Length: 251
Image 1 (cartoon, rainbow, N blue to C red):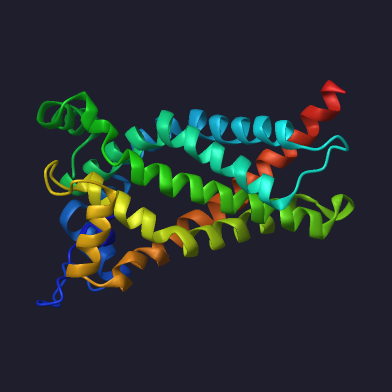
Image 2 (image 1 turned 90 degrees about the vertical axis):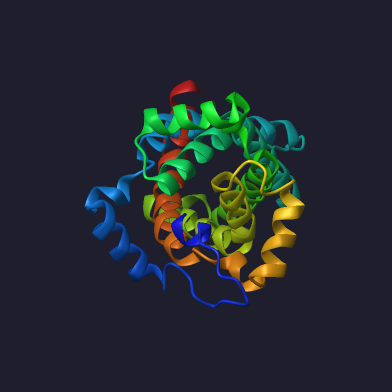
């Protein structure tokens, strides 16, 4: 988030952070080791409803789109993922990410940071960057669920053990980050900026490209990979294992 928030203008190539290690070092020197955990509270608070909405919506849409034989195409898996991402973006992710980004940017605890947002921008301030978050989450989940289910079909149900589920989820997380990082950068820029800086998502894209160049859209990819890849491996492994056990109990 901090790497994505910094601006590196073409005219002046100096940036606040030289890279991942420098960002890590500066954060600890300035805010102590616990500065690395700033923004954790809203993430923890909303982790359960976010995962529930994501997987619940995906399963619901997937069941609706299956054919009479119970099969579903890659494109319909992608559509189910898009729908899951849209729902979680609107209900949970946008307010969570807005608060998290502000807490990291201003180095504030949860209550004072949330109060500051509402005081300066109103209650709608926590929904800042909704269109860009929808783009990010929809594409994210569309890609992730498509990759995971394609990998699952490739491995086959007999060999789809927890390890292979973890590998499939990690692969889904890896490809998702590489393909949709530009949406994440734009979302972070909008949510971390002053309320009047960007008119909309397109304006933010245009501003980044004109002032900083296209490579900036992949800024923060390495730390995102470090978080998302193992995280999605664990999440998909857990989800699919629980789903299988629940189906056995229900049937």
